[in-house]
Length: 91
Image 1 (cartoon, rainbow, N blue to C red):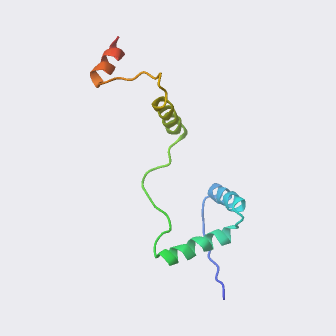
Image 2 (image 1 turned 90 degrees about the vertical axis):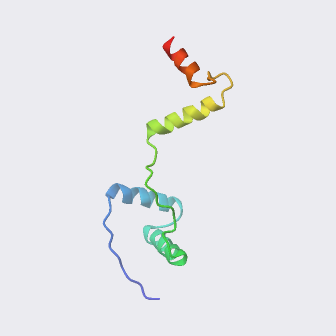
């Protein structure tokens, strides 16, 4: 099988992070890109979901963890309705 080269320009931090990830998976960049391309050809599509929703930042992740903790805490304060909440907030 003959081979071809491609040149890709990308952010140096992204490249470093990708190389570290692929190394941890036992792959190099060339193999990882080849896997991606083979899967795209096989699926006749991008082999993962592409969406507009950003990755949550640290503040959002902390709020999500706190909400999960409160949801499972039987001693956490709760309200039967919005009026109860507003009354508590105003007192």
